Image 1 (tube, rainbow, N blue to C red):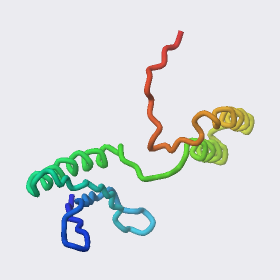
Image 2 (cartoon, one colour):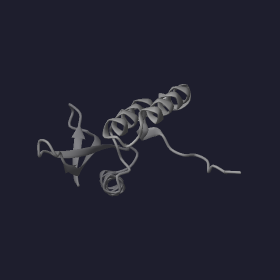
Image 3 (cartoon, helix red, strand yellow):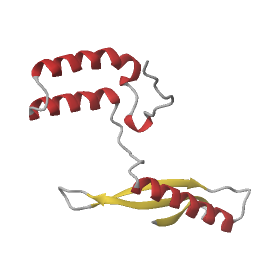
Length: 129
């Protein structure tokens, strides 16, 4: 984890940038870094703000390690289409099953298709009767 002060033109700290190593890209071998911005609270002193940035950074680092954080903007509809086609091409599902899943995807799209996967969470427990 790396914490950097972000300053404006006058040299006043406005925020802290927390950088956390996520993984290495398989194709290029380059590091993939996740960033978090922590706003500077002018009502508190500099020491408190630095400690707050470290605390938020530790929470962010744990979230990255547990694969909770994502920066992808892919929507549920796009991902569902990708999964169906990938499984069909790999022979995991039959053509007729893929057709049925595409129909269900089309029916679900107006309700959840526009939601990005990073924002999609379960809010209620389902009860099966």
